[in-house]
Length: 467
Image 1 (cartoon, rainbow, N blue to C red):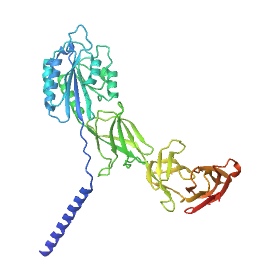
Image 2 (cartoon, one colour):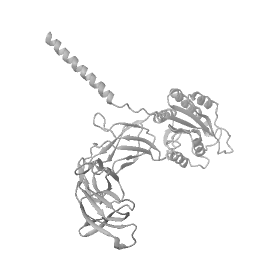
Image 3 (cartoon, one colour):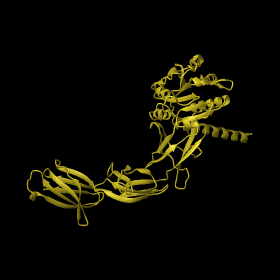
Image 4 (cartoon, rainbow, N blue to C red):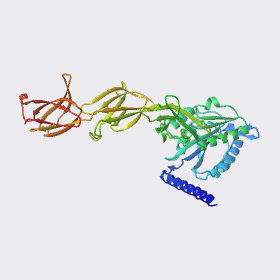
């Protein structure tokens, strides 16, 4: 019995330690960032032109459409962060004559207004023509300014443009200006795919059942986000690269929609992202140099996996000797053969780069140029330069001084001394130098003096000008 009691005590102790450890880990885990969900604003543009009075299965097209929309509104009336509005065209003026401005916002956006939309639909009778493009254009005014909103148009119609407008051009303009996302169009009675495919996402409703199904799909896509993942591939085509910032931009409007840091989840796989499926994206992955996915289409309701080649290695910059010899020393990093600066990296740091060859321009005195430095997959390439020495220039007079590097019987200018300082200190790479100096007050070149000196790593050299 005593032995069993000891086992029980040990088990309880282990459980207690695990519980304590889990509490400590939870305390060390930063809280998840809670972002306010956007408000989804859905504008119904309803066709009330004369043709909607046509018989279609059990009733007129208009009565069937408004009944199905009203039933759908009942099912989603209490959704959070969702607002609705109603614009109607073809209902104010009898045709003929043709009035191509016959469109009006009947119920503006507001919370809990679905009963108003249903009530207004009951009082409308189809009468006029189809100013479809003009109605789309006017819908831009229906969305009040909002910094955290998704603006969606659902167009329900049984006919095409009758007022010489261009719905496709208007839709592109609205999307480009960030006013709306890609519209949904439900065509009643016949297939209008060729006419409306350029306007937005088209659904064909050849009967009542199709209309109900199309509206259900459209509402589901409008309200629900979709999951996806980005695989950053190494040179073997495996999704092992991670920790890079990613920007998702709406191709049509140019608006930045999301920023993420690429993450591997607890199973070692690229983490799942939840994004709006109604947008076509450009994805910029902020590696060095950056890589991108030019066009990303998300299929609503389906997990999407995309990949980008992003094999990376590491570049370490270090200095021999004391790490504090020169604070703030940097190197310009460029792609081999390019004049464009890719990065400015600090000495003492290690940074990731896409695999390939790079040119370095180390901003020491004198500058050091290294070409075709190879960065390979998951490997650290280390560049080490000598520890500099210190040159102390002591001038009896203010004056003009040029510091020259002496190498292989050639002099190369690397620095101009200050005209106003009589004491100046420089960190210089080991090597042979010559200083050429003339006092500021003198007006003859015969007062020019020159002096050779050698700099050694970690040592201080005094250069006295005009003793």
